[in-house]
Amino acid sequence: MRGESILIADDEKLIRWSLKQELIREGFDVLEAETVEQTLAFVREKEPDLIILDQRLPDGTGIDVLQEMRKEKNEVSVIMVTAVDRSDVAVQAMKLGASDYVTKPVNIEELKVVINKTLESTRLKRQVAHYLREQEKQYGFCGMIGSSPVMQKVFEQIQKVAKSSTTTVLITGESGTGKELVARAIYFLSDREGKPLMTVNCTALTETLIESELFGHEKGAFTDAKAQKKGIFELADGGTVFLDEIGDMTPALQAKLLRVLEQKTFRRVGGNSDITVDVRIIAATNQPLEAKIAEGKFRTDLYYRLNVANIHLPPLMERGDDVLLLANFFLQEFNTMFHKHFKGLSDETRDLFLQYHWPGNVRELRNVMERAVLLDDGDLIFAHHVKLGHLRNLPKAEEADKSEDAGVALSLYEIEKQTLIRALEKTNYNQSQAARLLKVGRDTLRYRMKKYGLLKKK
Image 1 (cartoon, helix red, strand yellow):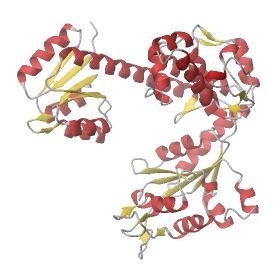
Image 2 (image 1 turned 60 degrees about the horizontal axis):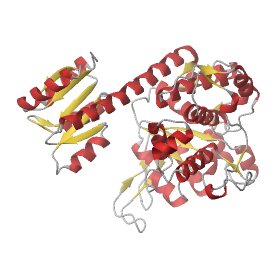
Image 3 (image 1 turned 180 degrees about the horizontal axis):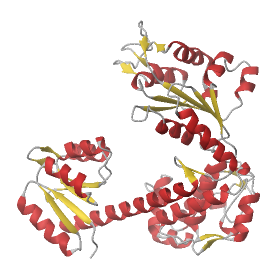
Image 4 (image 1 turned 30 degrees about the horizontal axis):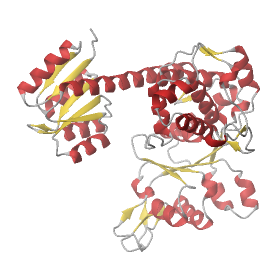
């Protein structure tokens, strides 16, 4: 018997009975509920592996159940059952965390397929979560892996800084070293945990948009301001605001941010009254702010306001054997994701990883491991499985046999995408043939196609 438990939440006794008989034959343990109250009680007490949840219940709706589960941070998988003409309910359910949905009248064979797919996904998530917990117990700290002295120092600094809920923090380090993980660790270890954590990438928005994003705007403040909007600082009152890539913030916005830091007040765009907030600000940058100050591109007074407590993340090449810990961590993650069975790295690969300078840091290592696990099979990751350094551009599919060097460095992301495109073009987008050409499973191929937006191609 499979032994996994499924909760059927439906107010119609006949439907519950018929579904229960089918699922028992499939080897599942089955629970029944006919109201919102009973469903939530079972979720809290029995922790089923899956819920088949009808939208219509006597004392509420399936959406009510999902909303309550979300409040309680309960991550039990849910398959929503909706009427054929209620696509809006299905969309809302998926936004609230439902794994999938089926429509009435329920086709039992279709439902079985959806159940198996959902439970497989749940099992994978649990395996990854278990491995993450075990790794963190041994080598980690708040989602970060590292046993090197430099990282142990970082972990100590995070714990000290987190104790003060008002101290402004500046996190520095190269791109890909994990600055956002540090910001989240400070938040979760502080007494502001449970209050809002709002993240802003200062490079992602124009000056006009980022000002509105940070401080909000009044109705009519500019052309598209059709209604009043609260900004991130207002929404984060009592919590934490993480400003990523602070070095890219414009001088005008720097002045307004300085005012928030000094006076705890700001005005919405187009507003006339001051708004007072209580937020902790954590900023991060991969740029040398001292150099930007010398160039007149960053305010000295803002720098000192932000740099009350500084945590510097070392590049991966300075972390010694941490690279091997992280490589094996990612290896197990992608083993689970791609249904592979690699046991570790070969001695040659270990030496290669320890000698390589990792310009893209942990992010680059993760990409390298993802590609190696995806595109190969076996017991060990050998050196020929990995691609390091400045890789040359792959030629276009139609030029593949004519050129070996386009002379332009590509990221691993671009190289993998080009590899997929070439395989698909050579097989006229026959996914089974392309999977065989790349020596991967068809599910793995579709996962990568979806990642690179290639599933829509005909």
